[in-house]
Length: 220
Image 1: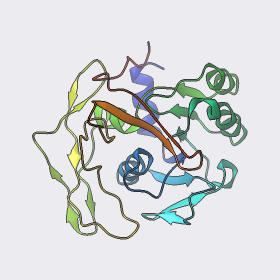
Image 2: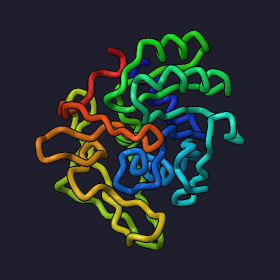
Image 3: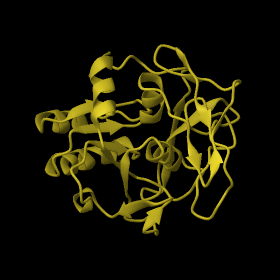
């Protein structure tokens, strides 16, 4: 997809299903979902092993076919080998787009999605792209206003800097905050400079990949 097409997709989408969403506030899937939820999207988590009916007010379901609304974007936090199955499910429910998070690529998932008429994005973070292309709106949660952190900037495509908002809010049971580390890609950074990019509690695994200081162009 071109940058313009991704912008239109994000601007016109209303319902996003996050596959592999974790109730753990330290997980990238939780942090990205929290951001999207507070940008006004109607969100549904999909994780049969979540153990919670909802996470910060977002319903968590066992499968995509349980989502009660037409799905615009299926955002996937699962390892590459599991994504073809998710692609089949996304096609079956009539989703508009399949989005594989940063660090995840699958030629098979791409072929399934595109054959089913879905738009396809891989190896990009939807939170980073939303902030870069549409701009994050100020977030207020639990009565505490979001505050900008001038020292923190996100790296968008091609290393273009974007400013993100760091929510200042009280921790609460079931709540979510940013990882207590580098937020530039919306993911926690390890001491060795590599970022945890994909997680899936139901797979019992966390993948990582090099923090490349930005992502490849969307239409590359």
